[in-house]
Length: 86
Image (tube, rainbow, N blue to C red; front, side, top):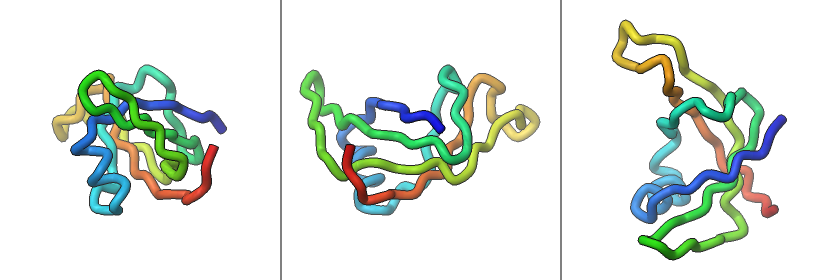
């Protein structure tokens, strides 16, 4: 299990943190895997807002389906909030 610190823009972070956005499209440059944890770092322009309760677990990784429009370099991560802090 890995912990990934990922930047996320303010408007997307709001959707994730309020439970409306449960999937994240990312370039698979970190070898994401089911069970890994994500700590989102909210960015508001050049400012970084570190909120303690923004840890999510990857529950599913969708990859390797270019016939459906998902480039092989990208994945769709299903995420679930853990509610813990780092």
